[in-house]
Length: 382
Image (cartoon, rainbow, N blue to C red; front, side):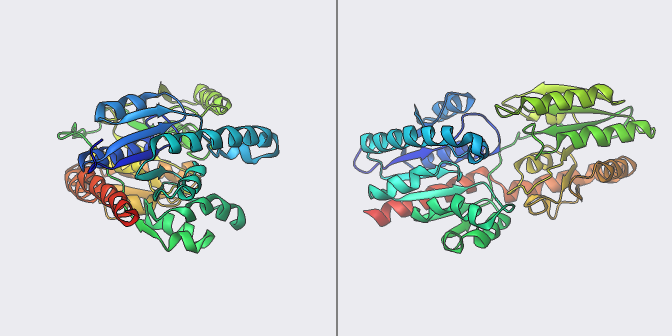
């Protein structure tokens, strides 16, 4: 490393390729593009690690304290203590060994890094991708509290910043809204001009009750039974420990009147989006933003999203998106039926919607903003 090349330690609590994982990759690309050496600390190997190395980053697999919700329940406390002790030691050792010029912490569930980096005099930029709007205010404040140690906080939506402000105003006061950068194919597959046969419905994301993939199956079943033919594709997988919910989804699909295809996890979503007619983002609880909804717009597909959290912010202003009440398969079915009826009007508008999404979520703009935020704290610390 040359004297003029800063070393940035980027920390992320997962190694898959879902929303926040992809944003970490874009952040690292931005830091590399703007002249930093980047070492990324991950808690496990996974597809994200390979993408990071391809981009030019170094990857370190290390023990890490990741604050999962299940650890906050009484039966998870013993593991929480074990992980906290092991994660503390690993964090301190890696900071001591690398002596980075700055630490970039991706998401709030890696809480040790801002604290121990600050104790070592290393400036920190935290990037918040979560919006814990439910639950007890004091608990939410505790989740955000470690990021008081950060010099700057990036948040992915106004909804996320407002949520932080309600829980811990001191963190919100140092925050800056940066819309996610979302990459997409240069020439996505056009939508069908006419909907001959079944309408192809797609869900992309984690299989969890919070995300609501079961609502897609229920809405499709209602449509099918009322004479509106549809098929459903589910692209995604579960967190470890939620296998029971995937089985519930499969059981629900088995008793429905709809053809439901489970594709599992795939690192690339665009070919699956190209094979669908409409994307559903049916979250039951507050989403901080909604990358998946933006990907649907970029893929030239209409999107039906719930009103949970930051999803209205993610789809606002597009002529090809619709919002429905959370936890309502009936409203999802109604909106899909409306889209089918108005398909000839929707298809020409998909191109203007994509153009606007490209403007809002240009990856190069996002990458530059992350790099500038990190370099600002490096200069401040010199």
